[in-house]
Amino acid sequence: MKKAIIMGASSGIGHEVARQLINEGWTVGVAARRIEQLTDLQNSAPERVFTAQIDVTEDHADASLSALITQMDGIDLYLHVAGIGWQNPSLEPEKEIKTMETNATGFTRMVGAAYRYFAEHGGGHIACITSIAGTKGLGPAPAYSATKALQNTYLQALEQLSLTKHHNIRFTDIRPGFVDTPLLSGTAHFPMLMTTNHVAKCIIKAIRQRRHVCVIDTRWRILTFLWRHIPDWIWRHIRLA
Ligand SMILES: NC(=O)c1ccc[n+]([C@@H]2O[C@H](COP(=O)([O-])OP(=O)(O)OC[C@H]3O[C@@H](n4cnc5c(N)ncnc54)[C@H](OP(=O)(O)O)[C@@H]3O)[C@@H](O)[C@H]2O)c1
Image 1: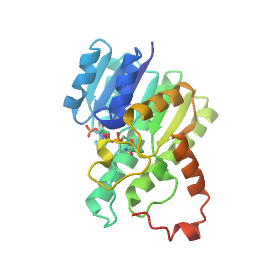
Image 2 (image 1 turned 120 degrees about the vertical axis):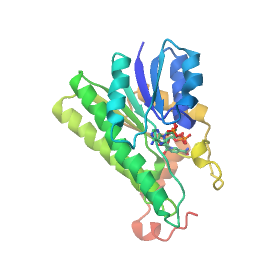
Image 3 (image 1 turned 60 degrees about the vertical axis):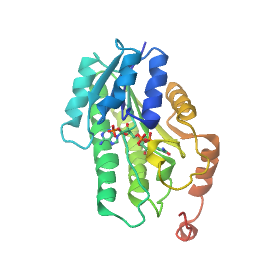
Image 4 (image 1 turned 45 degrees about the horizontal axis):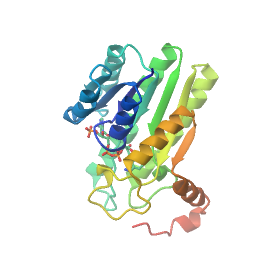
């Protein structure tokens, strides 16, 4: 029987992963700003599900995470899902900056808190839902693609830190392609769209297999491999939206 905290479990990918882990018998702490959206998860197994209202952009969010860990009497897995993003080709500053605050500053705050907890408690597993968007800078979504690349690099850095300091922390950087969630609603048509059910199964499998980096799914793995090999002088001219 394992214990996990899922940060960003009120909708989309995080909600579905939480649902599947609870069904598998895990004890799960679920957190987000919209605590009312966590009720169905708690009702599904009240003795094994803990909820917390946490906004990762707030200064004291790391203390709230520590309180939830204490309430659960420790955890084995921290899964960071919380994230926002928009297509923002007009560079509306509030969208760009809010994305930076959530996906860069908030991410760093929470993953850092999880790292310190595991380093002090003999190790553990940190998994994060980043994105294929971090593969290259995307013109229609500058802040989103840049913050996802930051997450990829930050996790690589922490993994090296943990190994060299013998902190015994494993890392899984999970990079899905397009998933049918509220994050994409109301915007353009998205090709190769995946369901949350399929993606959550792939995420749990990647965590169980202790993968370092996992692009979901095979089609997106091939596409990002090709993207990575497009020379910058060609990439600059590609019109994405
Ligand atoms: N959908 C895709 O195509 C796709 C593809 C690749 C990667 N991703 C990544 O997957 C993650 C989940 O996105 P999703 O598609 O499942 O979208 P979603 O349904 O909008 O879920 C986003 C989750 O993040 C939480 N969140 C956002 N801001 C937060 C904050 N300040 N503090 C705490 N929690 C916060 C939301 O909860 P509250 O609003 O209740 O706080 C919600 O639970 C994101 O990191 C996203 O970048 C998505």
